[in-house]
Length: 602
Image 1 (cartoon, rainbow, N blue to C red):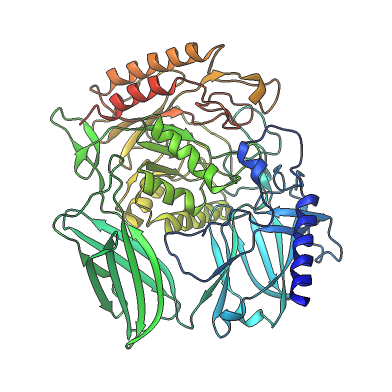
Image 2: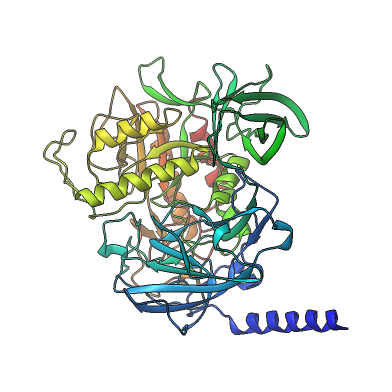
């Protein structure tokens, strides 16, 4: 009877919490927003590239307070916020701006599962924008800066039996600081969007053993038919042994072992399956850490055998290659914004939807535009077969053009603090995304936004990750460095520059606008680079531009990016509406021409 009463109390409490929460504001929302369960928010395992069985999701309703910068933790909170949605978003249930003069405080209680007794406990944050300070049971356990990268802390010494208290303080200056921020501004308009502050990716606990794996780094080499796996642990012991098993489905197809901290080199089978958009073959990995003969830790992962490179074709044009074959890479500019969650998709189903529609439209690539997505997004790209060009989120000054000497212009100088912030976060982004097979190109700068020391940054990026291509400045101040020259031209494709030593690509074009009145962020102020009144008119213009692009491929273009996947706030130039409820252009017609473009160099 007592157990029944406890269950009834829990049920009533959950029902009460669900009834109390509702989306803030009256703006448009996706269908997924109507299915939000405050007791089960984004429940999927948040890091599929390195998975353990024992974890606990901390998403859900937390207490929150907005207070002037510098004050102590509040004694009383303003209300509840739904984590992990930014405070400015509708799905947070708050919908308030933060600003540089305020701190955002979060608080919740949690209990560690009893079966974790004797284990170490890690606290993970997928991403928090921008500066986060964290306490467990009033013990400061860490601080992190950077709005786009995951971080974690071992909180074991701060834990106590029973209920524990977690407090997080966030400060985010948005466009009043020099930090990477992407499209966020305090006064949104045009191509600039609503601020995103605070926790915006999953918060979770993980149980790990006394000695554990902290990171894995997989590098395929299809020319030598091997997979190199670097494994980092919390304790550097030369006696530790690392074992990597490679599975094709349930079949063990390869294995490698190393000691003394050296990478594991796994000889892959002779009939190895290569990853490509047409055949996204993945191998499952099982990575084990031994101390002597004792198993200390084991994680699951996956990898793919693939290679990104460039090579001059028979006509002397430098082409992008996948697996040593020319491939024209073509896809949309993907901002990754949501009308209800801003940076955060309302569900995993929503997250995968945009990628799947990109495949349905016949593209083979996505340019992830000045935003970094949650880890699951990249796993979906790996599984579905989409090449990703990953931008560094822009920060510091807005575009500053130097046209006097187009290829050797004198760049602006960042402050030492601004430069250090950029370098720190760019390295963290590359580190956390390195092992995802889908990523083919790093893009350090976009359209001169905060662009500085371009040759040096491009060289560092290439040296730090020689397995990918480097697009040094997409549409920005151009320097003869990196692997490609990237032009932007709106609305139609045009090759107004050509580089005989690097691949020449069209990093942005299009922007065909179509207003659908029931699916607008705002009733007016909507714009596209060109605007039409019907889906047929917009589709016809898309096909016209696509045929121009096809004609430019033999002349030298090796990749192209169409603007854009979805409408975003007052930009109405998406293939889909912002609420993802309408496909605006003729999908069948687009798929046919897009496939022709993707196959142009085969």
